[in-house]
Length: 339
Image 1 (spheres, rainbow, N blue to C red):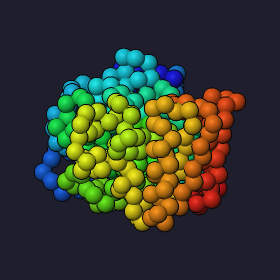
Image 2 (image 1 turned 60 degrees about the vertical axis):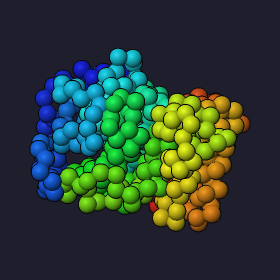
Image 3 (image 1 turned 30 degrees about the vertical axis):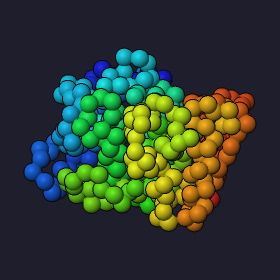
Image 4 (image 1 turned 30 degrees about the horizontal axis):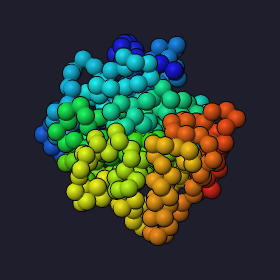
């Protein structure tokens, strides 16, 4: 399951047809004087995961706030197989199903906000979703440790922009804008959790007509998520240090604790955790579940006896391997899957 940055840069723009080509190449209506270029959609070689995998840049120019490891010649670095760092140009990796059912999921892999583990929690999950008829958009988001001036808000900006772009391109991908959800793992679970709870808080200035659309997901799946930055549960050393620092004031802890931001407008949430997880201890999903119930938000939680942290789709035969089937059933129950 490798996806090297040189593969992303190889080849010419993909040939699209009909309405899809028109929608994909049409320039966005500008609301700010920034340079706009067509979103880059490049094919991967047939030997790469998903022969029809496409790449969509999130921002028409440099991302908001400035800073970061900006290099015009590459989007990100994948020196280690399946592990992404050096995110200069955040983007979406698109995995299309053979028989799309109109639903879509933006997937955020984890990595402690220091890297993105697409080899375990990104591409395999996207391919599994596509087999179920969902269009998957694997999010390559900015990492706060890489010098972005907006710091901990940089990945949140990328997630909001991703949701809006997917909805803006709904016609091109045959999607129902009301069935676009998120699925996040570990730190990616934190990112998708904040996207589900703070969608009404605009974290960047509008740049085009896509930003007039809602960033609120239709549903959210949070798999062994990092949820809270509050003591005594803030033992997720990497994510906590990156987002709020070593000894942050209580206000900052609360600002980046997902359960604190839950409100009645939060979409339905599906939670998965293993009791023996030593990184995101079980208090994280329990706090989220309690907050969702208090706000009257539909939620389902599965707490498995074994699985540890970072099990992705689950080791075959292990208790945690049941969650993908349970998640599909939950989405079907909420009307997100239609034949």
